[in-house]
Amino acid sequence: MSYQQPQPGHPQQPGWGQQPPPAPKKSNAGKIIGFGCLGIIGLLVLIGIIGAVAMGGDDGSDTGTSKQPTAAGDAKPGKDNDAEPDAPKEQPEKKAPVAVTAKQVDFKKSILAQGDDYTSVQVTITNNSKSDIDINPLYVTITDTDGSKHTAELGVDEDQLDTVKLAPGENVTGTVTGKGKFDAGYVTYTDGLIGDSVRGDVS
Image 1 (spheres, rainbow, N blue to C red):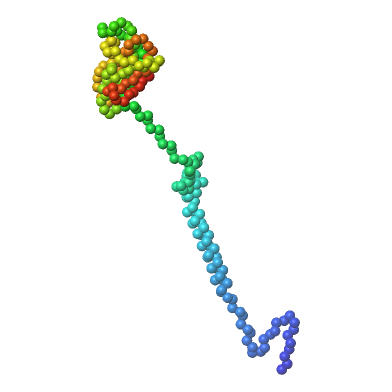
Image 2 (image 1 turned 90 degrees about the vertical axis):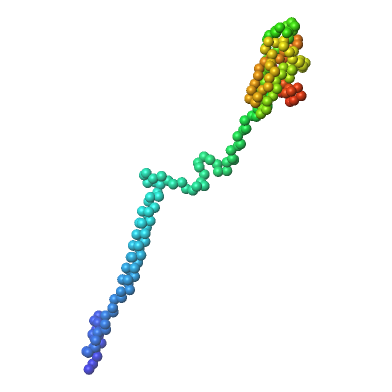
């Protein structure tokens, strides 16, 4: 029996009694890998959609929504975080324990006056202290514009300053009269003659 060489272009025929080689089986590995990749991509897309929907409510650009403040410590526009603390408020001016005001007035002659050669100053004394103070015309002196001091002449002016005790918050007004004619510069009140002196300019 002779063996013939196959002709070019023709597949070799299997010999008589020989089984043809089995066809290669298609592997399912490629399909599994393909479906696996597709599932991962789909899962990522789904996560992205869910995330976009969840964050959509926080977007300040949507109509009807307001942008939340960034942080509690953020600076407000127009203010300096390092600004100096407010300056302490000025304390109200403390009142003097005794206040004295005065103005020169016309002399009103009383029956005790000898002539008209007198100068009268109307004095108002206010007690701003927490204790009583004593008021007496003899506790007040008048200093004229030349610097000369004049003591009070008692009983010569009808409106003479009364002798009283002033409680805290009270005041009294009356005249203090000096001998002679002069221009009064200021008056000085001394509590109890030997106490503190308070001066008031004559207007």
